[in-house]
Each structure stands twice: as C-alpha cells, then as structure tokens.
Amino acid sequence: MKRQEQVLFYQFQDDEKLALACKTLHKMGIVTKILQPEDWREKVGYLLGAKGFQPAKAKDEDNFVFPHEVMVLQNIRNKRLDEVLLALKEAGVPHIRFKAVVTPFNTLWTLRRLCETMQKEHGALVEQAN
Image 1 (cartoon, rainbow, N blue to C red):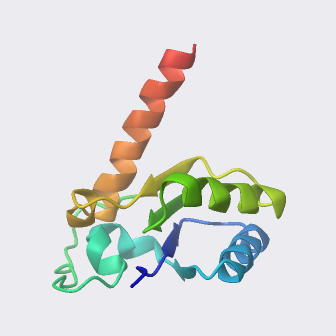
Image 2: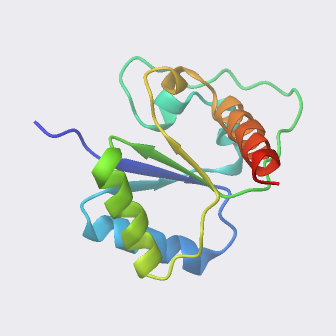
C-alpha cells in the first residue's frame, strides 16, 4: 500500500500562491493542509494526523513568530520530490525557501523546532555560499 503523500503549508501570506500550490499538488494526488499561525506549538506528527500524537497543552509562554513560508512534505522523497518541486515551478508557484521532508526524528519535534532548525541550516548554507 502506498503511503498517503501530504504537504503542510505554514505562514503563507499570499493566497494566490497558496491556492496555486494546493491545486498543483491536488492534481498529483497529494493531500494538502494549511496550518494556523499558532500551530507552532504542535508536534509535526500531530499536524500530519499521525497516530499516537496528542494536541499540545496550550501554554501562554512566548509568542513564536516565524516570518517565512514553510512547506513540510510527508512521504515525498528522492525522484518524487524532484517531480513535485518541478511541477510547482512549472505551475508558476514562486520559490518557497523553507522546505522540510518529514523524517522519523522530526515528526517528534514541534513545528517551532523544525522552523528554527531550518532557519539555522539555511543560515549556514547562505554563509557557505558567500
């Protein structure tokens, strides 16, 4: 049985870009889910609807704000990942800088940790490029 491919979208401000991305992925048989700004508290596994995950206990602590658009891809890797990214590009979806593929490790992370890790890695990549 093929595992359901799913993409989570977080912090998209441009509704047209988001609609175009969702439409393109739906044509490829990929389920999409648009996350709410406060979903940073939740574990990635919970946001994906994985079994065994409970919603986070709401805390009033700091308000995490991640100003970048994030795309989290589940069960999409290797050649299929290339196909998906190419389809988005060909459909005219503007570049999404922060992308993550779900792993057994990062499903246990909160969305906040995933975003912060991507930002650190992106920063390191930018430094290497300079």
